[in-house]
Length: 333
Image (cartoon, rainbow, N blue to C red):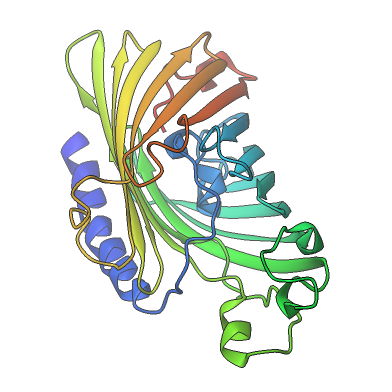
């Protein structure tokens, strides 16, 4: 039975991998999406098809402080909640986040819907969509400039505040031993500034499409250990970032892990940047069948290494198991 489910996943891996390669040709230029080190425990934030996949009402809160010591470095707070309905054939979810980078504040709220289909006795394929809006506020007039007072830069002549409606979609195939998914969280390329200056600059000031490919699986190592490798690819038209992760679960209650992240300027091999972008250490504690806490520390490997003191990320999750049989320990995905 396990072999049959693995074969089913293998067939879908070929289809989804081809799809993400094809889609990456048409993606855009810049990495604008919020970055998470513990993406494997916050999947709804990158793929709407994940909604309801945990089979219970699940809530996750996350706080991230990036590049400590650098003024204006990104700070992110996010909250997600999702649950299955209609005999687990449908999943619904909500995500809200606030992301501050320099003088810009992004606050977004999105609703997710996933239709789930059994493709084998143990595997489920979910097709998801999401819709919502982000409020972009930029305090541009407060930016200190080196230009003389009589020189006016039109890009900083006034503050900006815009609502950016958007919609996304995704696929997510999973069973109790593995998962693979592809998503495009934001399909609409909203214009970010109502600036009528240089047209080339205007074309670049927009939301860009980002494509995500995620996959992971569990390898049992006896009665008390389990190894869980995972991968996240974030791609645009000519840029890509790769997160390689490895978590070791001990007695289904404690997990220690490490990640290596690259951030290439061009969509080439993940090994093109030999030093990578960051090395990440993780600790996850399943305090009870329903409560989990996680922590991640990013050690930068790029040019920012000496200018900052790392990045910190804290994750809290609580799951409401109305029937004891619904709570599985551990919930790997």
